[in-house]
Image (cartoon, rainbow, N blue to C red):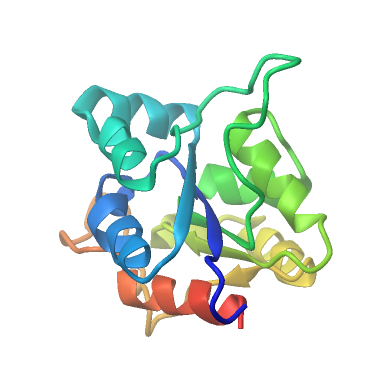
Length: 185
């Protein structure tokens, strides 16, 4: 894709760290020449609209931040993406993606991307140790990997802590950016 502007379809879900999308992901990628189209789950949309962060993301990207589906007959508000990323992905979002549930605009967008040949999807599961011990967690992760989804995970990237016992920390933004860039190489 050398020399052309790459487009990232970025989905944020209602998990800790979504408030850091601007500084951790959007601004660095825009500075590197990326075009970013942001879609949020309903919870993430409510959070970021309440703080004004959704308006800031729209200003920086030059595109509307989507939460709701467009009306029939409306033009597409976002360009086609070269790569999609779900950052952060809540345990709920991971479970729904693994079984193909598309009950909001964000999940519809990513489920379509997973089913589109040649379009990489990068996902950062923002989970804790309790989520990872759930009896269905391993099968959800396996289903996403089998579908070709690039997961940004592992103890070296995001060590898991017990629920409500996690120390304050930033998301692994550098790892996430690297995975997005290499997914399009």
